[in-house]
Length: 227
Ligand SMILES: [Fe+2]
Figure 1: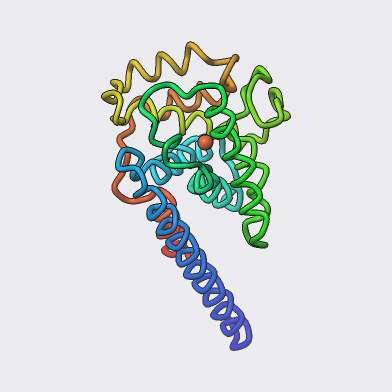
Figure 2: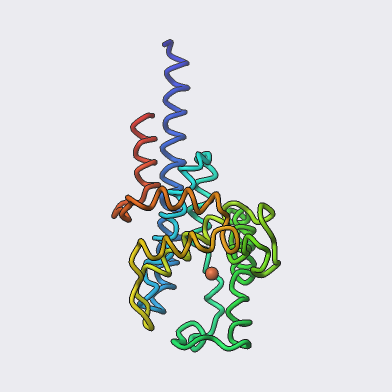
């Protein structure tokens, strides 16, 4: 390799390292903000980080390109950011929500999308967050989108979100056993959830324990080693 090629290669590596450092800083900041928000409710602490890990696991199994995985991770972390506008008495209510309260709760995907749309770097995530409560059969909210009209990222986040909500202990009930939760996901495949996402999720999660280290961090380390 001649001198100019070596220099170009060095600059290329430096650029990759800087990009990676920036991404790590960015995602750590998002995690910290989301973590701070989740302290409002001890039972949802860590929920968004777990949802992002499950979502990435599905995205990897679907062979999504790395840039799309990055977007999926961020959107999964931020999916419930709009709950910042949901009053505590609704957010923490143990009993079922009444119609009026549920209407308020249902605003959070749109509120989240509006918040993200104000940050240029997060704008591509707006549809993923806005549609994370759409159902495959079109009976979800806010827009009643159906099937593949719902962004794939939102369909993945919905499954990951529901699985984590079912398997973790809340103030009003104990977390369900993983097998029971997977059976419930399967039961709602094709109605609430995208059957393709469910199949991938079930095959991936059956032998999966939530790792202490983010899968994305591992990917980043592998990328660094490869560079
Ligand atoms: Fe949500």
